[in-house]
Length: 403
Figure 1 (cartoon, rainbow, N blue to C red):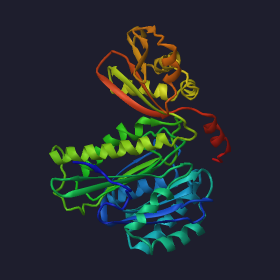
Figure 2: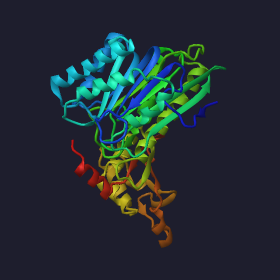
Figure 3: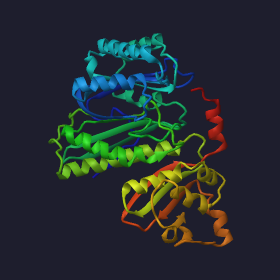
Figure 4: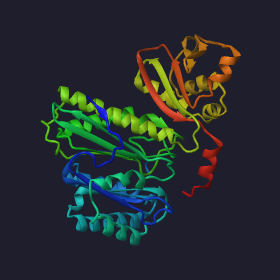
């Protein structure tokens, strides 16, 4: 049985400590955290497919090759993305890792750095060094509480989740924190998402199941269709729960997969619910399509249409915008065989627009949560994408946010 943890923290799994503080990278809130496992942990990481990658990602990709995808510590700063910073950005990342390695007695190749925030500005290494000096002496289980805050940028809420399950009779915990509010259409993972677990698990299976969970959750969300330079999703498994090793094809593997998928889904949805300027949380399900890939293309076509998103904000049940957005992504289908529902009300059926009662139509788009169901009737596959509306506030936030 899987149980969600109340007031979760990234250090809930056995063998993890952390600390977080405000160093001054941001004007307000904590902006630096360190997460450490007592022992080296198996790791699976997904990085952005954006060709413009931040310095921490480039250094991390080198380290993971050296370590064989093992990790023991993670340092994350917000307020500065260390992206578009050239050779100096790479040197700053390596110096951050070298200094942290000395302070917490972890080999450099087992430390990953991650950054988020303003692009194109060099890290203030004085603040980084002072932060590491202080945090390295404060690592504790309780210190995990501050990490969810320390990774935020324009987010308005902390995003922290945790689940426990029994494998087979040994408690195993999976915890995760995420950040993301704008510049959101991950193309591998998400803005930032860090997951810890104490499960003893086959390394190949961990990578396979995490890849699958990322594809079904973090890769199925969009605020503005923009893939970041710093997107990172990571899971580390230190094996300290003491359970029999989880191997593919076993009942334990199924339980772990389901728990991780549910955790990732809740993390991904929390990002959309906190979308910049969002007034609507929108679920778009494109159903009965000939392939998952085609269903996904159509769902994202709807989710990323500025016209559709504006209609969501204006509370206009504009079926024409939705149908045409699905039809412009290059997937062959017959609109005369398609059906469209908004919040369980048919507004288009087998090629014909429907006109529900005026009182129904006036209330249809008012809820803060909308469910769009487009049924194509060409096959048995489906895809669900979570998105937001496009509001005045989104434009204001991004017009004023320096990148």
